[in-house]
Length: 203
Image 1 (cartoon, rainbow, N blue to C red):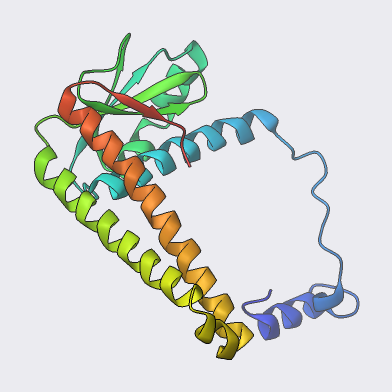
Image 2 (cartoon, helix red, strand yellow):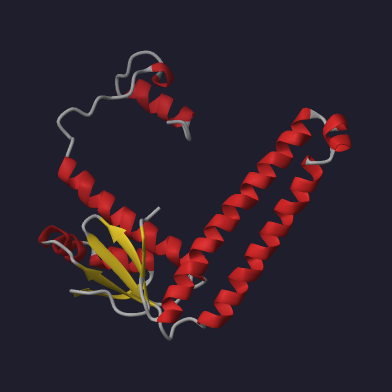
């Protein structure tokens, strides 16, 4: 209705609706709740979101990867089987496998009771990616230093409008968030390079 109000209002009147649809209360969908379905789809969303996040952070947005589920309970195995095609398509995976332990050189995402491992050895140039992330961290830290210098300048603080000061503080917070995110990604890359996996919570 919010996207096609003229059409929906017309249909509402022609199908026996009373008053304006725009001010009519939302329908109550009683009896349609399904906690099990909510939990299952929530698991799929958490898994795909976690994989996409890792892909972006370590610079492999589209490379085909394997997913290895470790320590998966029976229900998680069933979920992976039921939604395997969807997960592979949305997360750009070439295969979903089960194993007792994560492979060496993998990034690991904790989803529920299981660990989702993405083996990266041989897929990325660990040294080059480490250098790139270090450069990006240095750039963000340099921007933080510039903002700190501005905010620490008494003359600037005395003359600058309140909204300008607020913008600078927001910029600083934004660069701090970037440093935190890149530092976490750098730790994951270093763990892959050392041959040991590193785990993280999705999100």
